[in-house]
Length: 309
Image (cartoon, rainbow, N blue to C red):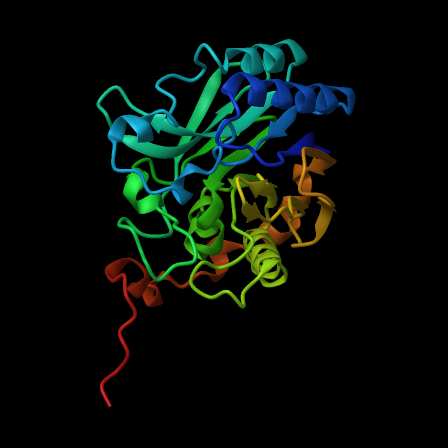
C-alpha cells in the first residue's frame, strides 16, 4: 500500500475585519490536529487567508491589493509554513497571488513535508463577471480581480504518488480532471469557496449547491480513477453564507469522509494511492480505450454551436 494520511482542513467563515494573524492562528490549530491524527498532507481551502473578497465591488486597486499576497510565505503567513515543516506535513493552501509584475491570480501551492514549495497552480476556470451586475442578488467578481491561470494543469511527484491541484469552479469542468488524469494523477487537491445560494437563481439553494458539488467531485474521481480531496471555506462571512461539504472521495467515486459543520473542522483519511491502479488499468485505461480522433471539438471551439435547422 502507498497510504497518504490526508487531512482535509475545512475553515469556517473569515470576516472582512479578521486579521491574517488571527486566521493563521486558526490554521495552525487545525494543523496541530492533523499532526495528532498522523497526517503527512494537509489540504486547506481556496483563498484561505482572507474573506471571499470577490463578493465586494471595488474600484480602488489599492483596496483590492490588500487581499493579495506578494510573497508566500510572507511575514504574516510564515508561522503556518514553519509549523508544517516542524510537523513534517506537506501543505496545499490557496491564496490570492500578486506577482512582482503586478499580475493577479487565484493560486494554490503544494509543499513537501520538508517545507519546500514544489508546485504552484493558478485557477483557470474563473466564474462570475467583471463589472457590477445589478441583476444579481450579490456580486461574484472573480473575472474582475483575477487573470485566468497561465500554468495549465501540471502534476508533481510527492508523498509517494502523483499529485495535482485545481481550485473551486475548476471542479465543475471535466477537462480539469481529464488533463490531470492523462498525467497519471492519483490525488487531486482542491479548495473552494462556494456561495450557498446561486446569485442568479435564488431557488438554487444549499441543497442543490451541495448536490452539484458532490456530483462534480465524485464524477471526476471515478472517471479518472483518482482520489479527490475537496476542502471548503464555509459559513456566514459578513452576512454572505458559503456551503461546507468538504469531501474526501476515493478512486471509485465514493465519499469516504465528509464534513458535518460549516466551521473549522478536520477530516482525515488514510488514502491508499494503490487503489487508483485497478481503474487506471481497466475501464479507464486511456491508452486502450480513448479515441482522440473524435475529440477535436473539445480544443477547437469554446462555445456550443448547434446544427442549422
